[in-house]
Amino acid sequence: MKPWDFHAVTGIQKMGHVQNPDPETRSELKLSLAKGWGISRVRAALQHFGDSLSVVKATVSELARIPGVSLHQARTMKQSLDRSRWEEEWSLCGRAAVRIIGLHASEYPLMLREIYDPPVIIYARGEFLPQDDRAIAIVGSRRCTLYGQRHTERLTTELVKCGFTIVSGMARGIDAIAHRAALKAGGRTMAVMAGGLGKVYPPEHTELSSEIAASGVVLSEMPLAQPPLGPLFPRRNRLISGLVLGVVVMEAGQRSGTLITTRHAIEQGREVFAVPGPIDSLASRGCHRLIQDGAKLVQGPEEIIEELGPLLEIASSRVADEAIEETPDRDSSFSELQKRVLAELSDHPITPESIITSLGLPASQVLSTLSVLEVRRCVRRLTGNRYCLFK
Image (tube, rainbow, N blue to C red; front, side, top):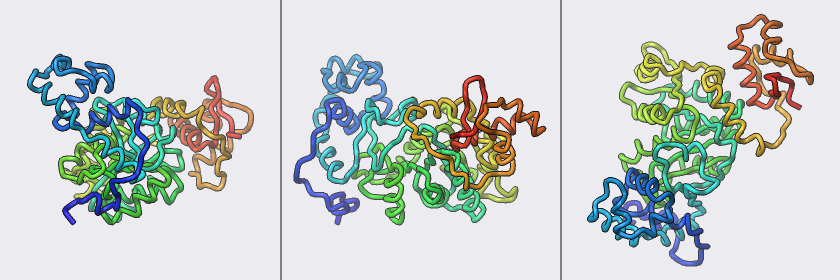
């Protein structure tokens, strides 16, 4: 078998019938597969023409009107579009149960669409849900310590209980621990791969990939048979940060590749959080530097919710009409502070000020706790900034 022989790996044959895509998805797929275009040129073309259909239909002279594109480059670009083997890619994905989602599609993640350079096509196993707009990335070292493992499992479980979808890169170490902890807690998780979905990398995560796809999404912007080459990992990291409201760094050395994700997050306007480690831990020096540079120090979900503030409210409102009313899990573990706040609430709405006065606690603690309980669907916020128990 040749290295990364897709047909040998998957057993997929070039035969049978797969329903054709709609015209806009077809044009987006052609554009994404065209050789020599690159992210910046695709973005410039879409900005110039307005949509992928117009780009694909454009003549050489029309392509040459894209800012920064010469007539010679336009000819090469047009030839590349015409030679795009989109039919084969579409057929292969159909047989591999991989869905191709274009930038125009309603299912395309809203958070990802808003970044500066969203992929025109994403390949996915699993289903995106509206609640995935309320997502947090947890990333860190491939060679994590027991400290990192323990606190990744703890924080992931707490964030899942607060209603967050967990996003990571399915790499060894912190990434895989976060995915597994989310699944164990009964939550949703999304894994972003650097290479194509035709073969899982690293190979020992094949079963994990299937588990994620069953209750979340495994996705990539790369064609199905694309090997996970080194330069694709930094490019992949912009998707991890692009899918989320904020990025939590669990463990990272001073030169960790994880810090690339935080740079993307800052450029995209996402929040950056870091979990501190022991002061003498080399594995946490990158986290400590992030905290020194202004990242929010995180010990639990309360700091994340407090920092996200209005962003979390917007994400929650996006899915309000889609949400299915569920009775909150009263058997779930609550912190002592959460229990005290819950004890103040009933069917009759009250203001946070009433709770603050009654408990004698700082306003920031009460407000962040109410936010956590709201995400967990234990309390309901009403007009006039009043709260009652969720029924």
